Length: 396
Image (tube, rainbow, N blue to C red; front, side, top):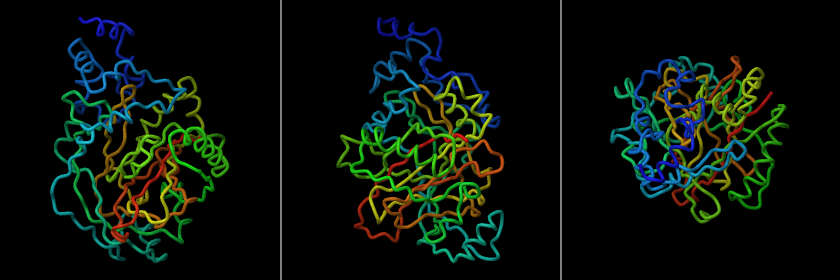
């Protein structure tokens, strides 16, 4: 055994050194029962189990994965933001099958199913739909009957593919909520639009951590009349790379998904509040994403929301997201003609979109599927969208 491997393997006596205690290898108590028996390909690669796999990671593109340690007091120390931007990682996207997009049936009085309340709203408010737009959904492959979908945030350098997710494109109508924003609430729809007059002179990693996040936490307490808010993650999204040295920007996520499952929300709470999580869950806890554009007013790639009232939970497929310290879980989404999708065209600098990632209240919408999409009505020479999202835990 090499000296480096020997030192690394003896820093801790078991494998929970790599994954948080609620996500250790072989621990399935917080996984949905229907996914516990599925094969998880990433487990053959992470955590390292012997000298051979340790050597593989030592010679990978980013060997520092072995020495990095998570500290719940520093939630924004996330090295995978750089790992996943590497040349190799950028080539390892979800596979989209070459197929002809399918059209969803038009909304009509004769087409009222589980989403009838939402269809009545569309009809009564006379909501305008954008031109048919392409969305990407998980394909219900036979593979997923035996193998759990996953997305790896581990560094490149092993034979583990970045993902086993395969998607298919569909044409959808997306309705503009402008003028009717109040008809869509966190409680019923899982999302709502608000005004948040937080002005920033510049947007970069430093200003977000030092200025924007504290202001958003303060605004959330006032806006939601809650006891407190804690922001644990943020992402810039867009095609703009002019300021890439000062902010880490991801491309818009063009696939229908939910950022978390109920199980992963509880694990997230344990990750950041390891000594208080059980007591905190005895009270109201919500997990929210706060999204806003920072390039205005024309957005070539807005964010669309699927009203929870039109969601069949059978179309939500749990998928692993693997970090060095943490086995997260999100939902991939299957296409369903009953789904109803919405967006707000031309959001301004003080417009924000709040949507649910999770909620321990049984009486409200717990989550909201969403996806970026290319708005075909936007001029081809329009500036590329740049946005910021922060993910928060809201107490009370």
